[in-house]
Length: 423
Length: 163
Image 1: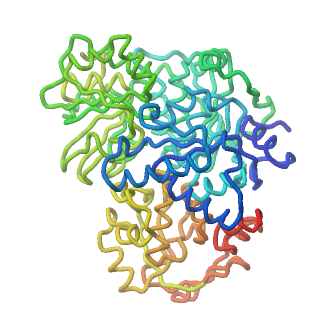
Image 2: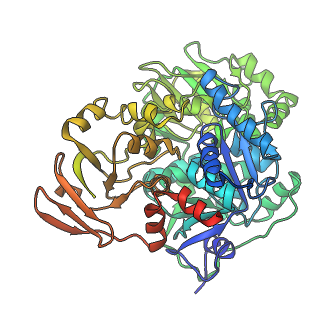
C-alpha cells in the first residue's frame, strides 16, 4: 500500500512506521507565532524551561511576526508586541521581523524563503496551512503547542487521512484560486474536511500560479482541513528559485495511496464566487449575486489570503482610470513591504490612490476586526479575506462577503457586489 | 468527573463567538472569562452560574475558526471542566487537550439537556446522564493523549521530558 504526500512527510519526521490515524510526536522544521499568539506561547516556553539554562530549540527556526495589531494599535497591543521583541532579543531569534520589515506572515514567510517543500512547519495561526502550496506539511496549532515546540522542537499530531480534490476543465474569465476554494468550501461545507488533509490536484492546479495556490491552501482551514497541500512541480521550483530557496526535498503521493475520498470538480462551470454572511460555505456564483444588487460600504483588498502582488495587479487592472463609488471605502493592503514596493514601482499604488482607495502598510488589521477598517452596525463589506463570521470585521450586526480581488475591485466601483465582466 | 450541563444546540460555534477578537488585546484568563461566549449568549456567565453548570454540550464543529487558544482558556477560566459535542474543529480540539480541558466527541447530544447532571469516566470510556439514568459508551483517548490530560496539559508533559 502506498502513502500520500502528507503521510510521507510525517513518516519521515517521526518514528517512520506510521500512517493515517496514528498519533505521532514529530520533529518540526520551523515554528511561527504572531503578536496575538506568541505572548501565550512565550509564557508556556518560560514555564517549561524555568530553572534550567535552556534556550529555544533552534534560534534559526523560530519565527516571530508581529502583524495582527501592528503598527501597534493601542497600549495593550504595544505591550503584547514588546513581549515578542524582548523575547526575540533575549533568545537571539534571527527571524524576528520588526515593523518596517514585517508583513502579513503567510505572505512574508514564503517570500523570505523560510519554508520549503517537504518540511513540517507549524504556526500558532490557523492560516499556517498556506505553505502546503509549496508541498510542505504545514498546519496551524495553538499557543501551547508552539511554546512546547520552541522548547522541544517537536509537536504531536494525529496523521490525517487525505481527501483528493481533482480540478479539471478550463477556468472561465476572472476565475481565480479564491473562487475555486470558495466553490469547494461551498460544496463540502465548513466541516467538510475536518481533521483531513486536502490535496489539491488536476490539470487546473497544474497550471495555477503560486499566488493562487497559496490562496487555495490558505483557506483549507475554512473547510476544517488540517492542511492543504499541492505536490511541487515546475511552477513551484521556479518560485523557489526566485526567492533563493535551494535546499528542499520533494515528496509525491504514491499512485496506490489511500484516500478518504476523491472529489472531482468541473471548472468549466465555476464562476467567480461570493461567500455570503456568516460562513465561508455560503458561496454563490456571481451570475446569481449580481442581480441581487447587494450594496456595500467597504471593500477590502489584501490579507494572507489575497495580499500578494498578483492580487494587487488584478485589482489595479480593474480600478485603472476608474473611481471608487461615493458610498464605498476601499482599503488596499499589500501583504509585505516587498509587495508594497513592487506595487509602487509598477504604478499600482498610483492607480489605487487615483481611484480613491487608501493603501495601508501591511497588517492583518481589518480581516479579524482588529483595526484599520472596522464596520459599524448594519454595514457591509466585500472582502478578499478568509472569514465572514458574525462580527468578524467589526460590529456584530455588520456583514462580510468574501470574494476574489477582481470581484472586490469591481464591486468597489459599482457600489454593489459584482464582477468585472458585468462592468 | 461530574457536573451540570449548559447546552447550545447551534452547530459551528466558532472561536470568534467563544472569545471575540476585540478582547484578544489581553491574555489574562480571568479577563477573557468575563467575555466568554458573549457574542453567542450575553448572559452565558449568569446562566451558567444559576444552573451551576461546568459542562458545555453543543452542536457539531464546535470551536471552528481561528487557532486562538484564548477560546478554551476563556472557557476553562469561566469554570467549564468539560466540553461535549458531536465533533470539534481540530485546532480547538488540540488546544483543549494541551491546556488539560477534557473534550468528548459524542453523537447523541439530543439525549442531554440543560441542567442535566453528567458523570464521565475517562478511563473506562463511559458517560452517565444521572438525570435520565442513561449510560453511553464514549471513545477512550489514546494513552499518549491521556498522559497529556493527566499531566494537566502539555506544559507539564513537556517539562517532564526536558528535566
